[in-house]
Length: 45
Image (tube, rainbow, N blue to C red):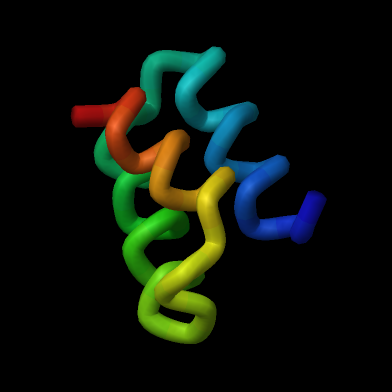
């Protein structure tokens, strides 16, 4: 799993949803079809 998504999962666990959302969105701008990143972003939402 890419490092930004690992960091986003850590932010979710800490309750820092805004930071997790920002990481997921930035990652998805670079790789728009990455399923795990989409899943994490949906979890934050």
